[in-house]
Amino acid sequence: MKTLIAYYSLTGHTQQLADEVAALLNADVEVLESSIKRGFFGYVRLAFDMLRKKEPTLRPIVHEPGEYDMVILAGPIWSGRMCSPTRVYAMQHNEQFTKTALLCTSRSGLPSYAEQCATAMIEAAGIHPVATLGLSMKQLEVDHSEAIAQFVAALTDDEAHA
Ligand SMILES: Cc1cc2nc3c(=O)[nH]c(=O)nc-3n(C[C@H](O)[C@H](O)[C@H](O)COP(=O)(O)O)c2cc1C
Figure 1 (cartoon, rainbow, N blue to C red):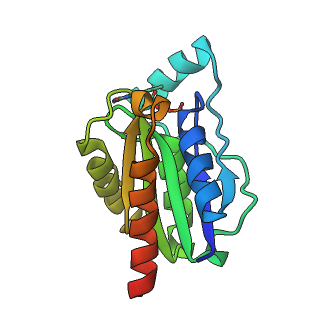
Figure 2 (tube, rainbow, N blue to C red; figure 1 turned 135 degrees about the vertical axis):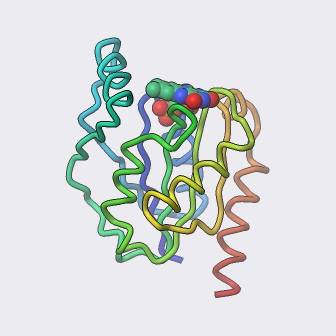
């Protein structure tokens, strides 16, 4: 299964999770870069943009999503939903996706986030992920190999039944 992981990460947590999953699946990685700046003023600007529902601009991508059997979309939870750069990427490329799955990280790790993310992505980009995994920042610091193994198994099971 030729797999691409497209992720946005402001502070490195989603990057960690995406890199771990990419290593297991031997996946290519698309790092989403946006107009959002890091640091204090970047956060203030981000808060304003979120209030105004202004979507960020993404830098040009390197990998062609249509060339992959599976595109895993990953990002942090912002205000209870998938971060805007990952949502924008999904909306821009949804017609090129064959199958998708979702990874998200959050501070609280509410179990409902993964499901909320999936619902929001269905509404925003019309995509139906075959598997989702949401982990908190704390879970990322301890052994989370079982959670990743279950996520990877869900992808490969889906492939086997295709
Ligand atoms: C603008 C913003 C909004 C956030 N909203 C939430 C939230 O609603 N719930 C939550 O649990 N964490 C929230 N967080 C925390 C991030 O989801 C969490 O730190 C995530 O792991 C960061 O991932 P990253 O390091 O890949 O950027 C928010 C962070 C930011 C910057």
